[in-house]
Image 1 (cartoon, rainbow, N blue to C red):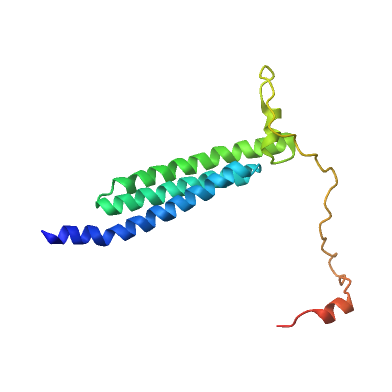
Image 2 (cartoon, one colour):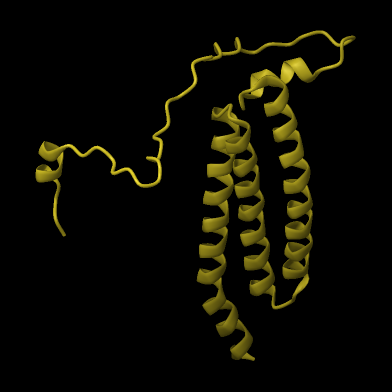
Length: 155
């Protein structure tokens, strides 16, 4: 008769730790959703929230000794994979139309009959192309800076 209560008492710290980790993940995802405007960061924050819920479901399933929560987590993961594919299409479509990944840029994707709602102004778009380093042509040695080469740390 005492054995099930001892097992439940031993499983309680595991449940508490799992719920704590799940709450931390969910909270970090919620903060990311509410504070960021980058679409990719918002999407990853939503995924982080889903993972926090999944950890909590697995912890409860382990505590009760059944597989119901774990089976539900498998369904949540499969829905999250489908959501990732759809969200990627939306993000790519918004980027190709507006040239930026700011959430406020989605205003240009609305229907013409809907009124515009702006929480903040869209940041100015920088038209200057960034300068990326280029490789030297084959057979030519790249220019080296002797002063910089002598200052490098040698491992």
